[in-house]
Image (cartoon, rainbow, N blue to C red; front, side, top):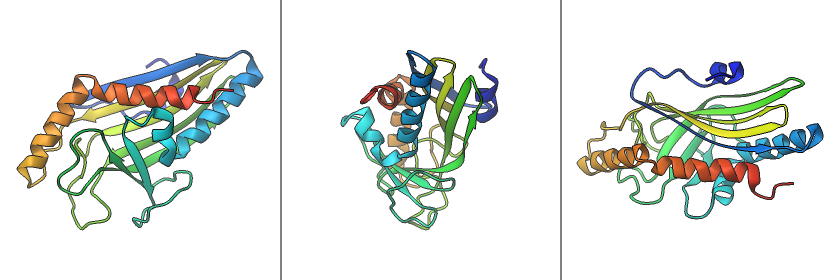
Length: 205
């Protein structure tokens, strides 16, 4: 990863698999680049609308606050995301869950960045202590909008991805393995490519 800002905010890869999906646009001028960044950044933090930008055939996302209440506002650190992926749902709890670990913004004359890093976690609506997600707990996803001069990128960085085999339910373990296998074969890239494209291009100014 060449860009210093991205190296600083994307978690290091230590074990398992990694992934990188992105979309780019080249803006007309500096004013247009700033405007496109603002629009994409606003879309990024309104997670409940991600399915609208990515398309109806993709995963849906619902934001919950840190006490487990469903909410409709810009995402904050420690919030939860419930993910309903196309195909086999999670037999244990209904949905896959991640929690926001880090988020932030940076800006200089030539560069702008906003990012959200999430990590697989237990379902906050239950008493379970095991991660309720097809990836095990070391796994993270970092969602980024990054502008450098007139180039704007939306990206998703996956790190330390392992199938979650901690459920007591063998059906859940089998489901998690096949969802993980599908991700490795490129199905996750299709999901994230639809999202990154939608964050940049939907109703483009």
